[in-house]
Structure formats: C-alpha cells, structure tokens
Length: 139
Image: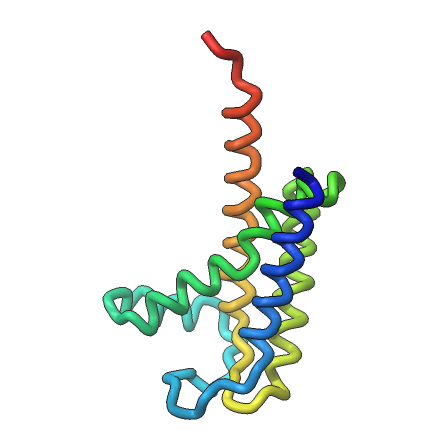
C-alpha cells in the first residue's frame, strides 16, 4: 500500500509541476498579473463561480496538493501531523509560485498558495477520516 501510494503521489507531483511550470498559451485566459494581496484572487473566484475557467482554477488549485495531505502521511509517517503537512504544502506551493515568476504567461499569486495549502489540509482531513472509518469497530 505504501509503495503504491508513493508511486501515485510522485506521479501526481511531477504532473502538477509540469502543468504549473510550463509556459501558458497567451490566449488561454491566464491572468498574467502577479498578486501579493491575500484573498484578492479568491474574491474573483467567488465572484465568477459560474464561469468554467474560474471554477477550474478553484478545483485545480485545491486539487494540486490535496494528495500531499491524503497520501503524504501514508508514504512518510512523520507527515501524520497536520502541521508538518501544512509546512510541506507551504514550501511546495511557495516554490512553485516563485518559479512561475520566470515562466512566460504565468503569474505568481499568493492566493494560489492559500488554495494549494487548503487543498493539502483537506487531503489530510480525508486521510484522518478514512483512517477512522477503517479502524472503526464493526457492530
């Protein structure tokens, strides 16, 4: 189980890095303005929730690091502490956002970090929930 989780998590992270660190097409709808104001872009997401583009941004940002919280504790037992998942998610997401400063037609956005970290913590909550369900006594 641990090896399978490690393979899936590794593949997910590599796929996520490829998606987030390749140059975007200039007409893809990518907002090419860097943002350091927390919750500015989240407000845009919520204001345009019916738009397929912005809905995909929400889902993508939440889903990018969700497996870190869900599978990370399976692969690396020290990650069974929520705050270590939090620190790892911040480090990964911040590194991606800093790298995107040099990727054509990409923007660096603090709200991407907020959403990515939230996704990792949601994954961790799912990990804990599944653990409780699996360990629950059968009546």
